[in-house]
Image 1 (cartoon, rainbow, N blue to C red):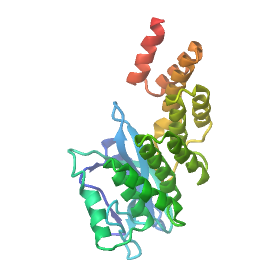
Image 2: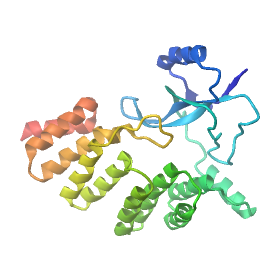
Image 3: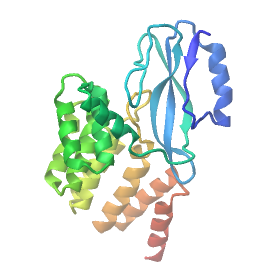
Image 4: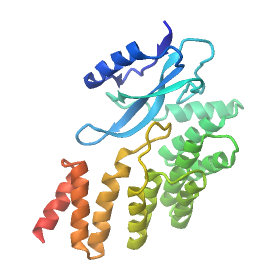
Length: 281
């Protein structure tokens, strides 16, 4: 056929998406080379996507496109690209081998193979998942210094480095890593929320308020290839501003922000807990 499509064995095209999927097949312009679709890989308590990103899902059937990478394989999107809001859900039935990816990377290095920037980034993430924080920072810092490398991966690498430094008790280095992300591109809501969380956890409430309110003024990122946490654009900052203003003694403003969080997720346990708290005062 004209296009190829890939799905993992634990990927699902939900019933609600199937009609849109078929309509896109019928209406797709023949000059499109790649169709990017949302990939939902984490879900909240109601099963709604809480972590998504775009992946190349339909690929023109020709020799121009090939998978690359030993882990987290990818087909580099090139040519005429269409972004679709159709989503594929990644729903694992059971846990896989947690050491598989790290073994593959280490075997490659033992064989003298060099990791290209994207693989180096994911290798650093695997080291972080395995709590090898010092080694993860070394690998990710090397990746950040490379001229090549995708900006979205570099921004996320700053976040992973910050988590490593925090685990090693290097709090100032963690904040520096988060702020470093701002040197690569415009602020991301996800990173601003992490910076706000840092200030909140360190009792610097005005600083936390600044970063969470900054998030609320950022445009929502649509049709971008990086990782997106939708809750970071409204629900999370609303909920955290509720906490900040409560600790600052402004209960009315805190309550207003909790209601805004509830408008985003009326089923949220955190929102309902806060609601009971304000009613008890």
